[in-house]
Amino acid sequence: MTEMMKAVRLHEFGGPEVLRHEEAPQPVAGVGEALVRVHAASLNPPDLYLRDGYRALPPEWRPNPQFPLILGTDISGVVAAVGENVSDFSVGDEVFSMVRFPHDLMTGSNAYADYVKVPASDLAKKPAGIDHIQAAAAPMSLLTAWQFLVELGHNAPNPFQDFHHAPIALEGKTVLVNGAGGGVGHLAVQVAKWKGARVIAVASGKHETALRDLGADAFIDYTRHAAETVAQDVDLVIDAVGGSDMERFLSVIKKNGALYLVNPLGFSGHEEAARRGITVSTTQVRSNGAQLAEAGRLLDDGTIRVVIDREFPLSEAAAAHERASEGGVQGKIVLIAK
Image 1 (cartoon, rainbow, N blue to C red):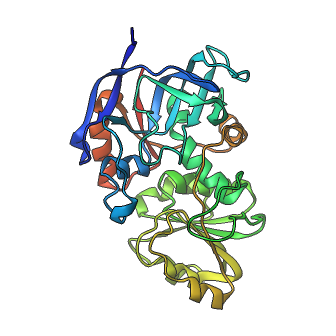
Image 2 (cartoon, rainbow, N blue to C red):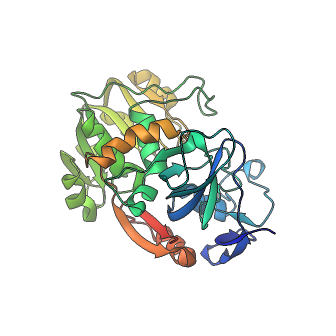
């Protein structure tokens, strides 16, 4: 007889109202997998895009999954069972993970649930110094910052460029983080600072106090001043926002500097960048338990902190998505399972 659990499922694409908290079959750990009892899961932009059917993408790129499906990639919880060939984790271990991303980008990685099965290679022990809420908030945002700024950690081809992304040395450099108040941005500020950079944070004014507390050396309120009219002689810009006119940052970057685009869709400044001697680079964050364990040490000792915007019960996932859609999120939104 199939064990059942509670999960938040989609039966159709649409707004937050399509998220249903309901009974669903409990997964079973397969070979090389662990079954994790989820204590908390966090929201990330791909969750919102998938819920909406990736309508911003060209039709040929949009998903055509089998419903119902379960959103979510980031979890923290306790190992409930292990499958064959799993030796690094045992029942009772506290763990966190970004689950099967981007492999399940178009189908959901099943994190908005009481239980989720996770490849052991995607898992890391939860840092003892933080709770499940903070741990669940970290994986995708922290791995994105890590793979852009510290170590790529994979050789997967990049659909947006014909070369592998290579993080530059940051010690003594000036780094501007656009979108510094958000999930990726506030962690990129801290990772860059840890690597020895002088950091300029760009966000709305309400984030200034928090970002200076996290280590930002300078702050630009984009609602009052366009960053490109204030900053100059920057070695690296990491843009965690995307959208239109990302090219504007080229004017503030030194020759031989770099522009890293977390969301490169729509960037059209490659010729100008080449003229200015600026490297434009992007990468797609990928699950990596070993990297998460390494970065987790910085969470454990307080070198890096995850800011929590709001917490919601798993049953109120629709309200959590509504909060995410309002914008102005400071850090991460977390769903509490149990």
